[in-house]
Image 1 (tube, protein in one colour):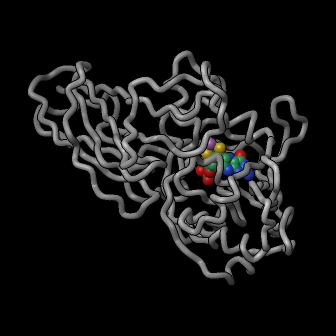
Image 2 (tube, protein in one colour):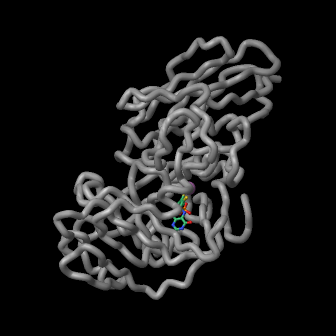
Length: 336
Ligand SMILES: Nc1nc2c(c(=O)[nH]1)N[C@H]1C(S)=C(S)[C@@H](COP(=O)(O)O)O[C@H]1N2
Ligand SMILES: [Mo]
């Protein structure tokens, strides 16, 4: 657990052992205390028809179900050096759930967005003190074209793993934005506001920004390609003989096409077996059969490549708030 109030927790190791993370094991990232939500979703701003939808209204619309891996942009912050500011996430702020909901673009189309719309702001009901702000509400925007793209399959979700969304994950409804870091998937959604100017709120331009040393700052968007070793555990004792190294890999820019494993620091990489994706937005299993021939300490590294050609770097560029750390992990095991 990162902190009890507001509750923030990584997934336990078992949360990455199957395709779907059980609800009680899914990581939780909440910036503020659990909010009261009046059960109404307002759709307003630059639209022809302002409307108010309830959970029943959303459930009455056509529903779709998508399995989506969410990762916090701060996942892996602890492994960056020097240590950036922010919650000390290790490497388990990533999980996968089956989400059921209404397609965002259909809800927006019914509202009749203005021709000069440029972005859509998603407001959460949660709020509280935040750095220099006495009482800030959680809100993030997406480019208008992305929200209206049927292929983006952005959901207003109300069920998680076939159960009604619980309080920690955003009841009664939340946004789910496939391929993007979790920050875009606004929980406790209570207002969808179409705007004709770029949104400049704190969660858009202050936090959840890559503050590069030598390039203009930019908001975090798509999840970066990454592999995790889930078995064996770090420091685990293994008997001499065949061993299956297992893990998960995911990316916001296309399916994983390759995972390689290295057994020394010298950079000889061997191909792992990668399972095809069951669906486009979910992590993939990989494994590597290894036969250690000497007792003692051995190192393991895993490196993923995605369909867009992105490869995990050894050391990703450092940024002040420590986002998007997809550096190759090093772990050791003891062969005894
Ligand atoms: N309203 C609201 N939505 C939010 C947040 C929040 O603090 N408030 N946190 C975001 C972040 S940073 C992440 S990583 C995901 C986490 O979703 P989860 O808690 O369901 O895993 O929710 C996002 N949506
Ligand atoms: Mo996050």
